Length: 173
Image (cartoon, rainbow, N blue to C red):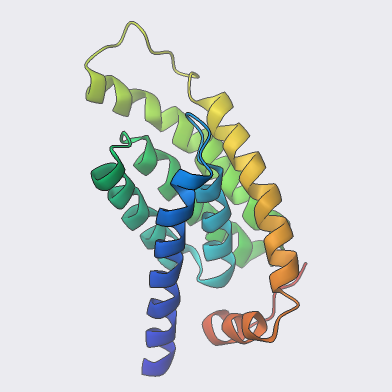
């Protein structure tokens, strides 16, 4: 059991590092599709709790080191949690992708409005749905990339071992 936790924390640290490095490299202004990729992979491999921790830590690092606004937090954490939760219940990759789209694309985008009103102090220039098209666009791009990556990963021995170790199951679909 202790060995399992160490493996899980090691994979969590690796995924945080990958997310922090890849997100700025593959960023479209106002969109972070690599965060969606990492949220879905974390949801499938690590589950909703560790996936949310990954998204939260990555958002904090991006905000402090790269000067990204609080949208990094509102966008990432809900998608990561729902990607893991939907996968846990649906047992299919498509469910994890849907969780990311609902969590980041809809919930995260709508919660970003009050956060940015507070952050900027301006209410007149912001509208409730201003972030939704960008967030949904990013989650769709990220979902496609995550699908391709996970379809290839599920053919590898180490990925199958990780899933059995962390979730006690094989990835279905």
